Amino acid sequence: METLLGSSTSRTGSADRAAPARPTGLSEHGRDTAAVLAGLDALRRDDHDYADGTVFNSICSAPLPVARQVFAQALDTNMGDNRIFPSLRRAETEVTALLGDLLGFPDAGGVATSGGTEANLLAVLAALRRDGRRARTGRPARIVLPESAHFSFDKILAMLGVEPVYAPLTPDLRVRVETLRSLVTEDTALVVATAGTSEAGAVDDVPAIAEHTRALGVPLHVDAATGGFLVPFARDLGHPLPPVGLDVPGVTSVTLDPHKYGGAPIPAGQLLVRDAADLDRLRVASHYRGTHDHHGLLGTRPGAAVLATWAALHTLGRAGYRTLVASVFERRELLLGLLRGAGFAVAPAPDLTVVTVRHPAPGQLVDALERRGFIASVARRYGLLRLVVHWHQSEEQLRALVAALTDADREIGGGAG
Ligand SMILES: *Cc1c(COP(=O)(O)O)cnc(C)c1O
Image (cartoon, rainbow, N blue to C red):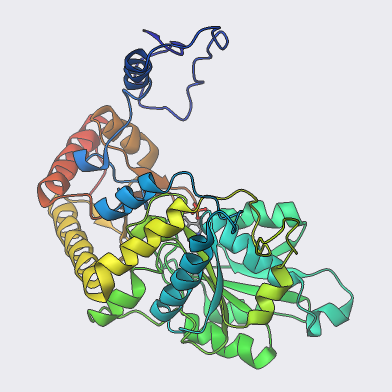
């Protein structure tokens, strides 16, 4: 089909693998808005809508209506210029305090980031710059992290040239605490734990890890990009989960992502730190008059997401998030029941909102499901089918998913049970 941006192929069910069509060049004359928008419709024709009930691979979702509205109004704001937009620094300070409170430490310092990747990067950098016991060994720094750590750490450690030391997992896909503890040495600059792994939603035993790192004086970073907005409310609701925030003594920093379960639009991430000295370790004096010092990677950076996060937090309050989290856990229970009823082997019991299923050919199953219009994924490290439950899915849509899964399983020769 010929589109504004050149010809393209139709939906293949493997969008990530197909090379996108290339335009022949920027045309001399622009087109009118109607033609551009028609071209855009064509360009976006294969996109899914969270509301259509086909998205089961995404930890992100549609933002709250108020967050969407604020984001659109604030598109021209730049966190890199505090003279034009003094509101943004106030908003960042308030969001940091509110998220610090959510994670058990209202006095936390922090940086609004583009997402969990940047926040994790800053946590690692701050740890490498600590002048503690590790620095005095004179040997290269190492970072101890679970085998389940998010893929952002692969990038970060490669960028910074730091050697990872991986701790293995239990059958529940949580980090094996005793082994992790034994891997912490004089060369360890930082230990990482995860509150909600992206592949299985597993929540590490943060208090048990923190007890050890605290005794040794080694910083502990909790990557709660997925779980930061889930765990505190799930605990309120009585789910048996450990605390994962700065309320746990020994936790020195936390990443969370308002653009996952926080109702905020992309790009909204946040680093929280217990000790303001960690922020100082990240500080780069601003080059520009009247502009606040930088602590993150970006220069020109969007204020819209911070303002939208501010709006989401104030709109929902604790009760609003608790209701959303309760509804997503109810959907999870429904999905688990439907899967088991259809003969699928759920494994292991999920801590949060990622449901994994044992299957002899999860990749084929995901492809067959995609031919039926549904997007799921494979937890690669574990070879499990991975389904993410989110508040954009209705009960009816979960039933449709399981019906399609059953059908897809039959098409590829079965083996689910
Ligand atoms: C999503 C995620 C990240 C990365 O965050 P981005 O916002 O995608 O940069 C890091 N850790 C975990 C556990 C995540 O789920």
